Image (tube, rainbow, N blue to C red; front, side, top):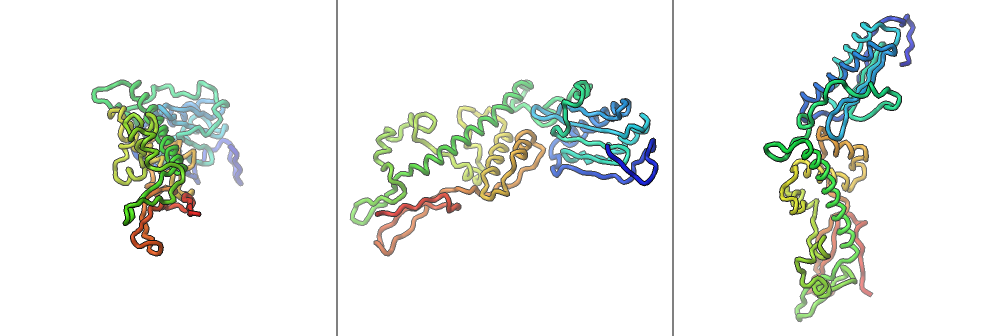
Length: 339
């Protein structure tokens, strides 16, 4: 701590002129349990600091399977143990514990808590980093078993790890499929008045008959992930229809936490928004994935969203129609003109 004043400051307790800072994110779930954890951690840290010669202590408390609560307090070393404890207790009672992080400074001491490590843990002795009291059980904070009748903490941890990984894998498959579809768009045909077919300039790769023959008439054995041609899932469309869980692999047989799956899909849509400033940063994504206490914004349409529209070509032939690609992102469309 660095302090200067125009008056005598040695061995003098001063709590006037406090300065409070807080994280912008509120605690939205299990507020009471979170408050109890913060107060317990801060009070024990204050006790250890006031009884030490350095008048300093920093440690962490178990929060959930993915996060710890970090706490730090310190006083000016010239204070007595009683004065230091009184000062720290005064600051702890004014911390913004309804937020996921906060700090308060007064001339004689300061206190801070966060859900991430904000100090050099290697500089703090190992004995100071764990709270003496047992950590609260994970189900009481943010994660509960999806199966009635129990299942154990091991089941909860397994599901909490497997579900996000599975969603990320599905999103990667969707991105790969989308890119492949752009590169290999099939011909689209519209019947003419005389019974002949006309092929649009959607692609010059394969016609419909070639794909039908290559996939054995679109047999079940050639579905995506099982051999080639198959269904392509539209995440944004399913989200708007209120059925994002249709993205899930049927092999899961409902053995997953619905809220966790929906939250992961929600985060993925936020990462794919058209405007770069609307997309979350990497650190924000990590916080969104590791805690459910942060509210998620409403996702905006992605930068690339393909649909179909039919335009009538009146000048060439009043009875002829062609099928054209359309997208909300002009950069995603390649126009091909006949020679």
